[in-house]
Length: 344
Ligand code: FES
Ligand SMILES: [Fe+2]
Image 1: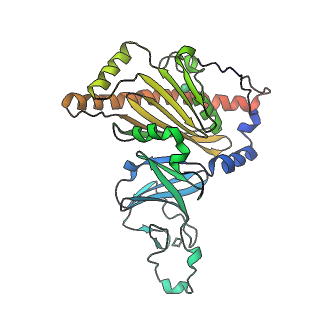
Image 2: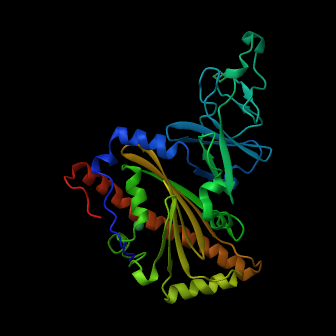
């Protein structure tokens, strides 16, 4: 296990995992101006496709306008209805479900039933609120703030790995999400340490790697962790499969956290993006998007291997997700009753 030479002290008190004030402060200072991975371009591939989300107490929609993806507040400027209430839809025009106002890809009004009734026209207040949307590989990110870093700047040195990992040699496998009755930091902090592995993942990961097999970069914006997969029977078989798919074998496991809430994990056979979204001081939503190795060869063996890898990676990923998920509520309930500051 990685041993920090400087012994960082435990920075947050237990009440900061449940207080309304802390939650509001975090939404404003950590989340309002950051990039949020919400979907993949495959989820919204056809013109007219729409996805809706409740993100940080804000209803938003993403729509494909003839190949151009746009994000808007999912609230109509007319009488404040949500434009669309379904999680997924497809429509020829972006139209409000209540009185049928239509909007173009800039968020400006198009056709309005009985438009004469609205003269003189209040152009300024009749537009949809638009949000920044950018993609990294096939991942779709949204940012509530009009200013600040582009997605590429925000990801910094992580950009190259992430953009190559979601698309290209790797193809989309699945997305899953679950709500947990705990503060978002409980989930995020769990993903930042491997100390819990023998206790929480005795069958999947078994042991944490030795210090001599752990490399870290701790940056104010992100952290990375790298280790070599054990040289055992299973990993030798996986390396053989990776070679058959025409991709170089590294045997490396990578784990990145782009603060505050996005985690990336990879082996040669998969790329996984996980993101935790606060819902309330004591609840959060955790979403995983998984891509598995497709490789570069197009022969029957490569096709069969890629098709076998996919369900196997998803099954193991879901098992690990469930093992971690089983601990969060107990940590949150402990925090609520703890007289201690925590030992770091
Ligand atoms: S509330 Fe949307 S058209 Fe009236
Ligand atoms: Fe874990």
